[in-house]
Length: 431
Ligand SMILES: Cc1cc2nc3c(=O)[nH]c(=O)nc-3n(C[C@H](O)[C@H](O)[C@H](O)COP(=O)(O)OP(=O)(O)OC[C@H]3O[C@@H](n4cnc5c(N)ncnc54)[C@H](O)[C@@H]3O)c2cc1C
Image 1 (cartoon, protein in one colour):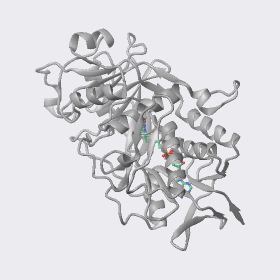
Image 2 (cartoon, helix red, strand yellow):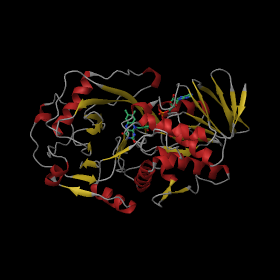
Image 3 (cartoon, helix red, strand yellow):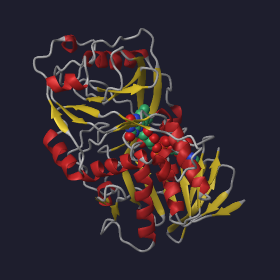
């Protein structure tokens, strides 16, 4: 069997569904293929869906700020009917602890340029915003069985606070919303079908082959396969001119009850102790890691062969670190939480780009920090693809994405596969 369309999108995660929706908004006929049974069952399903604007380049900051406006106008963004249940933003603010690997002056400069309200706060103000917080400085993060972990802080810490930012209450629902929006524009989703071959002809892509032998003819193929992205790139035979590589990494996010007095407190990004703390419905917290150097990175060879059960050891480590910052937090004896896989790029910045194979594009390397950008990732990919397919030389003259809400100009060269690695990257999920 053979089908035909203008663009095939590989992957129906939050970014793949957004790419499909935006390509359809530009008038392309689109088929999305996913080996899972429904939208969002890849890495999106375990996302903490935190929205913060702290990145190390102007383009990344501006992109997240624009995406936040899309989330705040989610029903309009989707053009969803009034009776569709949609995901919601919890706009509670973000407190990002000051650490040597993230420059506060640079962040201030970038936030000012992008028009994001922010405040550098000391201990007293921090305690007003998050009552009960411990304002000690503990850098660098340590293992909890290291005696130094338990030593008293010798100094107090500052933080960068943004009153805006927060999280999406239901990341899976947000993905279903995007897939529904795409379907309303005629996008076809083929679930439980795996792309097994990228087809080429005369030096350019011409479609994909699926595990059941079906071929889809298409002049454009977009790899949005999350942690499986490098496997798809291997099928396409691309990579010869990349300076940036991607690699899957296992992660755990833990779930604990929140102390009584905590109610809609801001997200706490705490690289000083090696965790982030996000409120969750049911008076709980999600506690994730920020790749502290003292912990071994859990690189993964095969994303289909990952231990998807959270471990007691990492649960104890992450929740105990969180409890150092919020001393009223109890560390339960039994572990609870989810396991997920990041698609980590060399500098923790995504690749949104074309490739050396004409017609083959990538929205990959999301590095644990691109859920928040899904609405804009779709838009910038649609801009990039239509520009390049109309003859624009994006490698020589990067496409500029002009944002709808915040009226910013975002240079898509920042997300090139051939970029000079971002030297301001924190080397963590912060980007
Ligand atoms: C634990 C965790 C916490 C996170 N927390 C945050 C956060 O707080 N804030 C934030 O902004 N970001 C966060 N992220 C990152 C964010 O969730 C991801 O960047 C985003 O979900 C990636 O979406 P995607 O569509 O690119 O990929 P995925 O959701 O991984 O989708 C890829 C899809 O491709 C399909 N696929 C793969 N190979 C094939 C094939 N051969 N044929 C057909 N289909 C295929 C898979 O089945 C999958 O559904 C987190 C990620 C994880 C894992």
